[in-house]
Image (cartoon, each protein chain N blue to C red):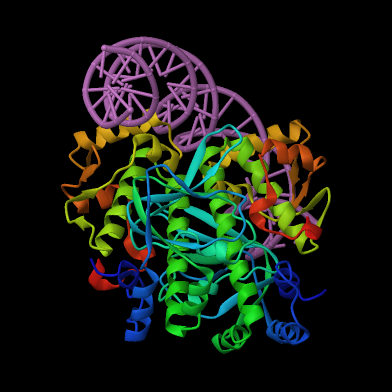
Length: 238
Length: 238
DNA sequence: CGTACTATTGATAGATATCAACGCTGGTGG
DNA sequence: CCACCAGCGTTGATATCTATCAATAGTACG
């Protein structure tokens, strides 16, 4: 299992040996989290930066009526709370979805990383890609039907997981609940269930247990109007 | 008319005299744009960074069916295309909404700004706040009814404009078309029109011409579940 | 073997989109 | 100066999508 962070940051530009050594050091002590465990609570002050090594996590916001909107997923290789390094208080919470292995990076270490121009640029790039994903999610929820939304989401996750070597070309492990998918897509659980069945019936997507099968990725991309440009991956990784 | 960029960046932390001098120099040559004029096209390579001095602009993405989703607004003091400084190609377009006065900042100048730690941090902070706004938009579109959405949007713009001295406590200039609002909120024009009428009838919001009146901001905030924390403004500015 | 969460199904209600039409306004050209 | 035109706001009628409510069945887990 190579260094996922290195692998991800090199999706932007190659790093020097010294940079990679530092990254190897960064990911040393990792911690296990159970599923549905909060990592950062809304309103908390600056904290460590978190890096997901294994499992799925998410950023979410709670609404007054108790419902929640998930605003990002984190898959292995993703940095979660980089912004908490700068902002005074978190405006959202972060929690695991599945069991996770996570590195908690100390502010000092971050500072050391930011002393290296190539790393700084790579981290910056990475956070800009996160922004791009967020914008695409906004488009997804704002403009697409429930069926298109789900197709698009699964295409995105598929590609993101492939980029870190965690997906086969015809499927991947996806340990989310239908209710969590609903919270992500701004849909009700019932409707998510029906749309998933419809996709299954069309042979586009089979989500059962913690496993997704995508028999024909191209067809799913077409339905979801999925254009991977916003992920800013290098050619080889797509 | 003070330097809006300075004013905005000092919303994070005070800047030194030298930093402010540099910012004063940065905003020197500005350019006028008409309404509905594209500034950056999706797919273009790295370009200048843009700073809005006057007017409203937006970031948007086009969909295959020709409709568009607006994913951010830019008001005076906002930096538009900071990411194009790093990413290879833009995954979205930027265009004016109203007539605008805009500064085009050369990459060299940006580099000079980034040589100053306090400015770097302030710019970073600013982009993190943009992210936070984007997340809140996602919540807005994902979870709130059309009426709540519009209320929330107008509360946000109200506060953002107040932070740069461009709004009175009971209203502001808002030169957007109902169709542009619809493209922002993931709603149809017709529905936006009806919701606006309903809000007007409730005495919460009067949008006519290019002017918005908000007789009772507190009541509007309540309807929109608007909690300004995500804007990360300093106390004084709220 | 309960208990609790997850997936599923049916029936119904509500919100929002779509289609079509019309008036108003500001600008433009004759 | 007036007539025309395009874009915007508005209205009504209807269709579609998605939420909500309620109930049941499967599944994991102590």
